[in-house]
Length: 421
Image 1 (cartoon, rainbow, N blue to C red):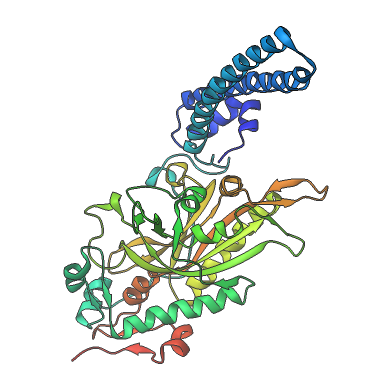
Image 2 (cartoon, rainbow, N blue to C red):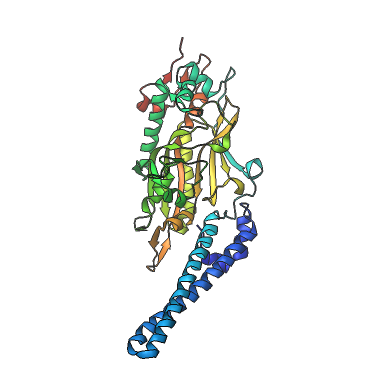
């Protein structure tokens, strides 16, 4: 959520910034108009309340007709106040709805546009794997090795679900545990959060979308399966004043993630790139505003270290305004080269969310003057299930076997997935 006071002071600045994310200027005009009506109604209500308080003090001193008239006048004031309060409630709801509809404005350095027009490749790291044969896609390799079964999963759960089997199931857990330890060694507090949250937590982090979220029991407990552990981990300090005396608060959370992928019909239907269920370790950091840029670069560096340790060639992409999403003001994607697909695909990302989420969730800290300020929140994916794709495609051999990154050997108990004869 944005700072309404700041929008009042600089409406044109916000119009220009939000236009880069596709928000029409009239939305800001409507917001300010509704806000003015709300404040007007608030002032009238407060005046009537003051009149009532004054009358309440004077009426006991009256008697006879004077007292009767004063009581009649009091009833008129009370009725009028009741009507105004109903109007005030409606006006407040309009302001809240408009304010909650606004995304976080992009930072000045973020390129305009979306897709290839907006997303800018900053640099490449590592070398593409070379092959003396035509490399296969991950799902072809996995099915041939009896590591992946999407056909039976579709029978059991529907499309975009899968069974990970045998060495691939072990590789998945090895990847998670290795990454969990890696980021823990960097000072991120390892956490396993709730995998279901109330709607307030999803709205507070800017992820609520009826087409994307799975509601567990509508009308009963109204709990939602999380699409990312960012939701419970940012919400972990909802309504709190946090302490930065020892520096930023850093968390690393493991969770399964559940997404409808409603907007991806027909895209990436084979394999495990775009699925309804996957696992992820998400880094979440709370810090002071002046620390946010440095923290963001640190998150990116950690994500890069992980891909380098896995021996995966990748590119760093500065995401354009059109693909930033609701909460982020700046975002990097790390995209791995997949030789089977012959293209780069996103493996991890990291975003600055400023005080957009913390303002919604009322997460504050005391500055040097002892004044309460909203903390800034950032997030970054250490690993998800997606690097499995890069490991399979980049580690494949002509005989169908798969070489495993050395850093995972202690966690898998094997160095290679042998070909099935």
